[in-house]
Image (tube, rainbow, N blue to C red):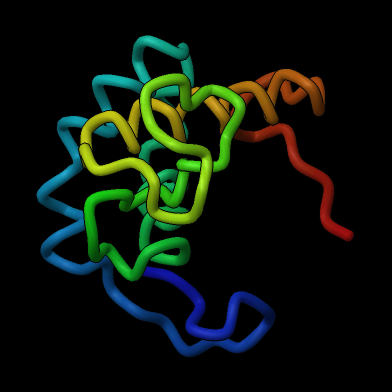
Length: 108
């Protein structure tokens, strides 16, 4: 479930069937990046970024980790590759922020 407005509103939205269908792929790349505890968050990112539609469900085309497709919006045309790149990008952000694990967060 996700907060509809991305803020403090308590309205929640369930993950779409399309995002749920990608769970095994998300889990595969999360495991490779040693961030398996973040599968649900990665699913939420996918819902927010693409509305689970299109061939670039993680909207990862413009990431520096995209080395196969044009780095323009929706440049990636392979959903699995989009998930691979998006997961790698998120993992890198966690490392740069020096996050220790999924319970390491600060409420601001």
